[in-house]
Length: 254
Image (cartoon, rainbow, N blue to C red; front, top):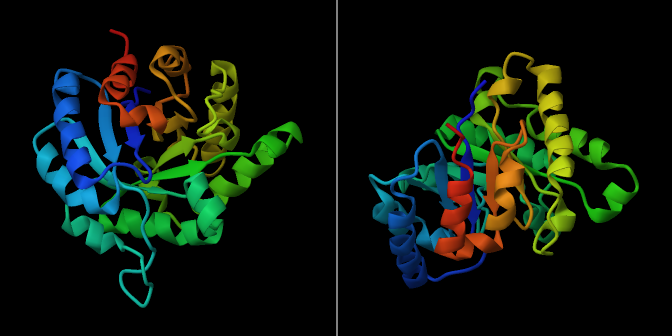
C-alpha cells in the first residue's frame, strides 16, 4: 500500500517568533515544488499562530509539540486541543521522549491524549522508543509493545490510520548517532506488527516515521526501507536548507 511520506521538524525550545518567521520564509521556496511528501513544522506555542498564518496555502503544515488531554481546567501552563484547533494547527506531537524524561509524561496520559487529539480533528504524532540500556538488555520489543498498546488503547478503531507513529530510539536523539537502516526497519516493522495484532486491516495504512539524529546524507537509505514512512527531525530541522534536503530525500521514487 502506498503511504504518503511525512517529514516533520521538531524545533523543541528553539527560535523566537521573529526567528521562526525568518526561517519559514527561507524554507517555503525550498519545498514549494516538492510533490508526494507532506511537510510539517513543530514550533513553540508562541510561534504557532504566526506560522499558521505564514504557511497558509503552502505545502507546510504546523504541528504543536504537546497538549493536555482535558479541554479546559486548572492545569497551569498547559494547552488544550480546542486551543490548538482555534489557531488552525494541523496536528500535535505526543509522548516525545523529552516530555517523558523531563516532565513525567506517562503512557496513561497518552492513552487519554491520543483520542482527545483525534476527537478535536488534530493529527497525533505518537512518539515511542527505547533507551540505550533497554536496547542493550534486549528490551526494545517489550518497551515498544507497552508504549504502543497503552497509548492506542482508547483510540477509536476507525481512526487508527489517522495516528502517525514516530519511532525515536532515545539513544540516538541529540547524540549524532543514527540507527542503521536495518535497525530502524527492524524496530518500525515490529511497531507495524503490533498495530496489525489488534487492527489487521489498518496496519498497512498507518504511517510510521523514524526520528533520531536524522541528517540529509543518511535520509535516503532510511526512507528506502519498506516500513519507514518519513522522519521526525530534531536538530537538522533548525536549518531550512538541511531540512529541505531531508524532505527531498523522502520523495517517492517514480
